[in-house]
Length: 422
Image 1 (cartoon, rainbow, N blue to C red):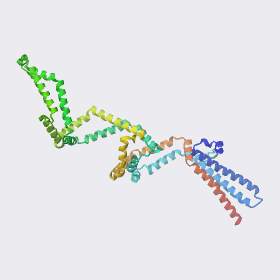
Image 2 (cartoon, rainbow, N blue to C red):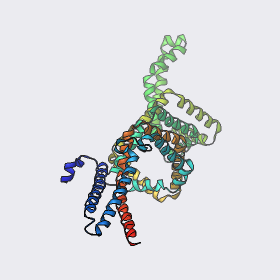
Image 3 (tube, rainbow, N blue to C red):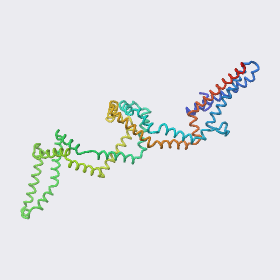
Image 4 (spheres, rainbow, N blue to C red):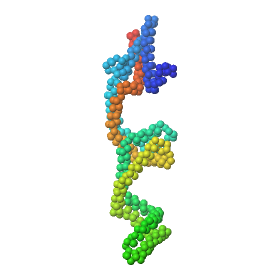
C-alpha cells in the first residue's frame, strides 16, 4: 500500500491501476536485466559462469526492448519520435470504428443469425420463472431492468407509440362482432334473473320521468281538447286521469313481479337476445351503431385517456418493481408466470413472437446501430480511443513485455551455451 500511495496508483481506477502496475513491473524487469548485464560484464573474467549470466541479461534486454517498442508503437510514438508505422491505434481509429461496426453487422446484426440464436433462447420460460418466483429484495439486475424499461418507455415517441396502441385498440374493437356477445350476455342474464334489477330500474326511471313531465301531458291534452272540454274543465280532469293511471300502472309493475306488462317486457328482452345472436339485420344495426360510437370524439378521448392511464401505470410499475409485484396485480403476475412454465403451447407462441420481434428489430435498426458504433468511435479523440483500449488490454500487453524479457534471456542463454559447447 505504501508503494501505491507513493506512485499515486491508489487514485486510479482498477483498470488503470492494473495497467500501470504491470508497466512498472515490466520496466523494472528491463532495468534489472540492464543492471545484471553491467555487473556480469565486469565480473566475466573472474569465472566463466558470469558469461552465462551476461548472455542471459543481454538477450533479455534485447527481447524486453523489442517488445516494449512493439507494445508502445500500438498506442503512441516510442519516446515521442514519429517513427513510421507507430501510434497505430490513434492513426487508425476511424478505420477501427468502421471495422468494429462491420464486424457487428456481419456477425451479429443479421436477421438470419438473430433468428438462429433466438431459437435457442426460451424467453417465455425465463419470464415465467421470474414472475412466479421474483427475486427477494432489491437486486442490481431487477433494478437495472426496471430503470431500462422505464427509460425506454419515456424515450419513445409518445405520439407515435400512443397512436399505434390506440389504433390497435380501435382495430380490435372494430373487428369484434359484438352483437352475438351482447345477445349471449343478455340471454344468460335472463336465465339467471339478473335482468330483474334492470327492469325495476326502468320502471322507477319511467315513474320519475312521468312526474317530472306532467305539464307536458297536461299541455298536450289541453291543446287537443275541444273548446267545450276546455270551457268545462274536462281537459284538466282527463289529463289528471291519464297521469294517475300511468303512475298507478307503474306502481303496480314495480310491486308485482308477475304484472302482464313486465311479462311483455321480459318477452321483448328474450326476443332481443335471440335477434342479437341470429338476426343479420339486427347484427348489422349493432355494428353500425358500434362504428358511430367509435367515431364519436368523446369515445376517442376515452381511448386516449385509457392509453395515458395504462402508460402511467406501466411507468409506475417499472420505477417501483416492489409495488408492481405486490397485491392483486402481483398475484396475477405470479399466476401468469406459473402458466408460462406449465403451458408449452403458450411458451411456443410467446417465443415465436419474441423471435420475430428480435428479427424485425434487427432488420429495421441493425444498420442504425452499426452507424452509431462507427460514428461514436469517429467522434472520439485519439487520446480517448488510446486510453480506453489500453485500459482494456494494456495489462496483458505488459505481460508480453515480461514474457519477451524472460524468453529473450533464455534464448540468449541457450545460444551462449551452444557457442561454448560446439
